[in-house]
Length: 127
Image 1 (cartoon, rainbow, N blue to C red):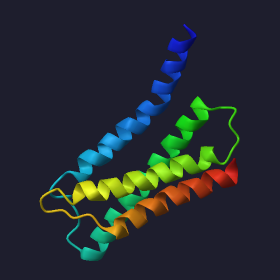
Image 2 (tube, rainbow, N blue to C red):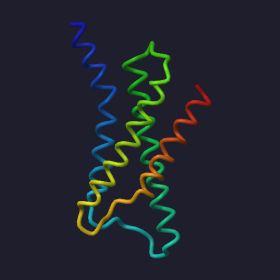
Image 3 (tube, helix red, strand yellow):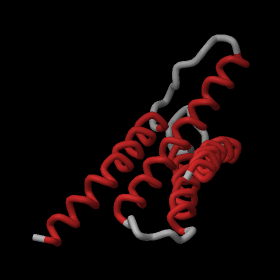
């Protein structure tokens, strides 16, 4: 019974992460991403989307870590979600390079990492 409870906690903690990762994967798999006709506005909107999506990814991973390892006060609770988020960002750009009409860029990994770093710094300041 205790194992069942532990598994339920793990699944409920990491389900939002998996759902969010799938959503990112689906969006990045689209051949055309709608945007604005003004190039600067389109750039800013899309990069803000990168930052926001990966800030949310970091927050969901951090939340899952806190739920599944509540007594852990080590730095890994903070760093593992950050590392995983950056690695997922890189893998997503590789995925995009296989989508017709799209290409992955290191610059986008940077914007994704910036989103994760902003979430990290915001949480670290207040916890």
